[in-house]
Image 1 (cartoon, helix red, strand yellow):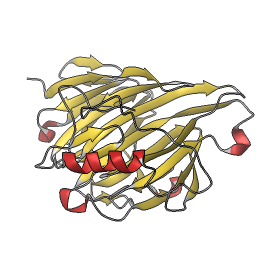
Image 2: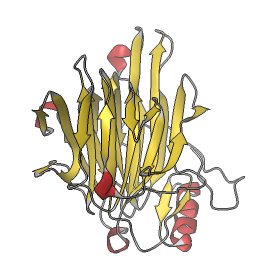
Image 3: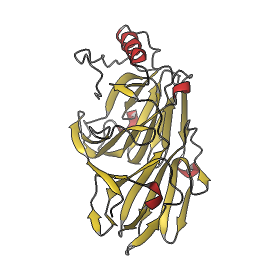
Length: 300
């Protein structure tokens, strides 16, 4: 019997200069553990006149995780941080009661050809921490726990699993694990004794085999039972295993706002429309609230 409850395929969306592949939320699966949003950015080859420019926009009730496979993004936020994230590093911004930030191509790359490829993820906060003070952390590539076991390369980007813990300050039990097979032969992966809560597997490149079935890139596989996580990672393949304990309350999502309380989102909408969020340092851009969407609905 297959342990795969659901398969979610990337859905392409154009955000300007390049396409993103939308993974979560999905109509039949709104979240996995505390993970409520995942975008696969690129891979995009940007010309010298093309740049990533996402002006200041707000967040509440979540942490954002940005992880790049290739390229560079300049992060600026209303806490005063100005940090360039490059390949292999992680930006982790906890919005709490409210923060604004922008994401742009760094100045030194704006007139040259460049590539951009990575993941953008939202992790909902526990109800008791939805109004916490905003925070920002940058974790360098060399500070992310990485190890090799039976020829398979692992990186623990966030959370705690397999007896290891990422330095990322997460606020609920979760894990986000990179598993990479750079060998020329297939490898058996057995993780069932270590996973907990809800769990999913995202195939970035290559293939996996599970219960005699072959699965291809740009798909999320939702597990029925985390204790049965057992698959064959094909040669030259990379997957991400993520999940954790789900929250008892529903999380509502409107645009960039996440909350267990609809009224909190309505307050945030009014606050942003009235320019009452704190300003982003050295970036006076502004993305207007999508007021045409009257009902709670995810929109990027």
